[in-house]
Length: 324
Ligand SMILES: NC(=O)c1ccc[n+]([C@@H]2O[C@H](COP(=O)([O-])OP(=O)(O)OC[C@H]3O[C@@H](n4cnc5c(N)ncnc54)[C@H](O)[C@@H]3O)[C@@H](O)[C@H]2O)c1
Image 1 (cartoon, helix red, strand yellow):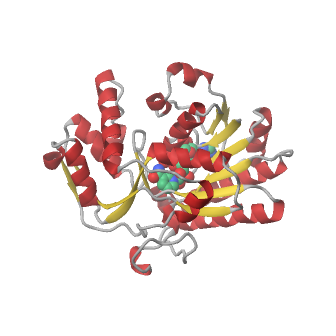
Image 2 (cartoon, rainbow, N blue to C red; image 1 turned 45 degrees about the vertical axis):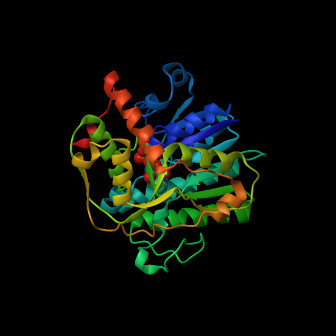
Image 3 (cartoon, rainbow, N blue to C red; image 1 turned 30 degrees about the vertical axis):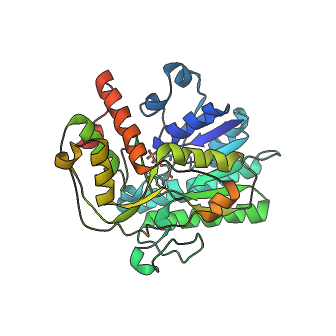
């Protein structure tokens, strides 16, 4: 199947392209501009050269529709979006790209001929409010959502709009809520600090993760797998699903990193404050509809991330622009 991947040159886009190719599908990358630096981490030069690219702004529904028609796509994975800090600083830009952009993708999909493509879209665990708003224990997908960021409210709006396209137009839609996704290529956004810490470790440089507390660490290859499985698996209606990886404190993350590379004990340190997003989410609905989806252990995910950064360092391709 040919799959339109909006935001395809981003972090998740690169790993989803890898997963799609591994399963015999053709990713068609849709993005503002072609920038293959993240793709180069997971695809060969030959694979990158062969990838179809459609340039455009995701908020331009006509452009998304034209690209989907020209490329004869059978599925859409919608990732294009602005992250928490940009939505906080520029909420109007955030709403245009994240909310109108998602509506533009849904509207384009609705206008395509049958069989219309299923749309799997990136929501976020940021739809949840702070842990103090909830009881202890894994939280189901449908508990009250009360985020403290524009980004979180935009994602709730997207989940709602995807559901309405499912109900009104019988468009197949699935929304997924990743938490801290980590791995090579993660270099922007509020929860990119754990990946930066691993990159600094590869460089032998000190780094302090500015926050602490409990969160859910999800290895990027697992998250890519979930997106592709939700695109190709038997459909279960317009749902929004929690994901679950390794729920751990930042101290436990640090301990796992020390087991992978003992130098982390002196080089990497962590903060105290809990991020204001409920960290303990129940993914049993996702598992029952699209599973089994087995997460990589934190230690194994960190070992693979560090190994890839070290390979890039040895090859002279390690991008350190995100380290300041
Ligand atoms: N990475 C995480 O931990 C995480 C967690 C939860 C949710 N998400 C969501 O997953 C999605 C992908 O995240 P990511 O980490 O790959 O982000 P990223 O910032 O690495 O990639 C986003 C991509 O979208 C593109 N883009 C931005 N505005 C666009 C526009 N107007 N038109 C077309 N393309 C545009 C960018 O050029 C970039 O290539 C986002 O929607 C994000 O909110 C990510």
